[in-house]
Image (cartoon, rainbow, N blue to C red; front, side, top):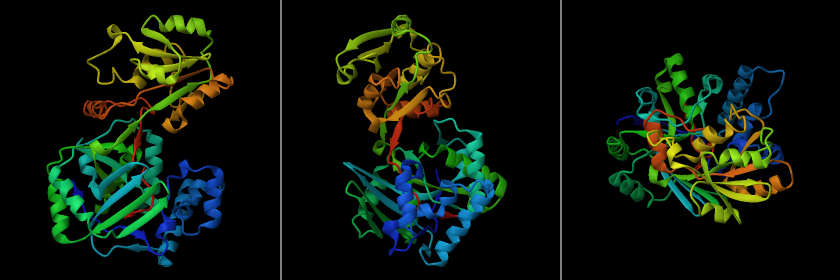
Length: 402
């Protein structure tokens, strides 16, 4: 699949590089955001400040144009520099005990249209249009789409050989995170990397469904050759880390705990457990209700084995418990339902239920990589917040202009 191309990235001047890139602003607390915006004039967050703290008197288009103006200001100060020749960017992320290595490249929207870039998440049209408008006004994208592919031995060997060279950029983000970047502009190496990606038949979107869909909308509307591509971080699929998303609910939809358990028993095998850890040792997923952990497993007679979603914890929970028993018709917007990534752990859920802030919690297993691929291959989508996928990419390490 000859669908990737080198590009001239805009990157932070080495003098401010350690201060420029950021996590997605959604990951920061209000206090952390305020501290960065007040004390770090070189942060990428300064560029998108109009989106973080919107002026109510401005339209969205005016906010996006304000972002563009700030971006041009950073360039005029020499804080952002465009690489002179098209190239690929080898990036290594060390996060805790995990090391992620991949290639930053421009990927053709045509491959998305042809279905060669597989998706597993249902996007919201309103978000697609909003980000398309953002891209149209700002003319840059600073956060790559995370695309996974089936590893290629020869490609992996080439990337590892490149990593033996001195990196173009070496950043220590924190005690637990560092990043290295190798700018590859040699025509021979660029051609070799392009060729080695040729046998890759499919890419799977691991993160960035709305960003990629918005880029497709822009390409259709803009008719500019540079918008026929979007920036992506290409990573071997076996490197991905898929973690669970747990659920916690504020009510049992008018049911008593006994009545709810009796309804569950009609389709589920239920076993009381002494702890969350012991409930994990059983088949199925975990539930915490009125001071008691349980393991739940859907009886085999009710499992739809022909459906790639049929054995997925998040799908079973939604189809057999949330909607029919707890009245959660729209899991995306129902305020009775909250999602908790692994960092919250079940200890927090137990505490919240014990304190009476919530009624019930569920600890799920993350889907496997093979499950995710099978769902994408079948043109199906996962329930909302089915998995939390690493790596999470920083904004501003490489910027794609168009």
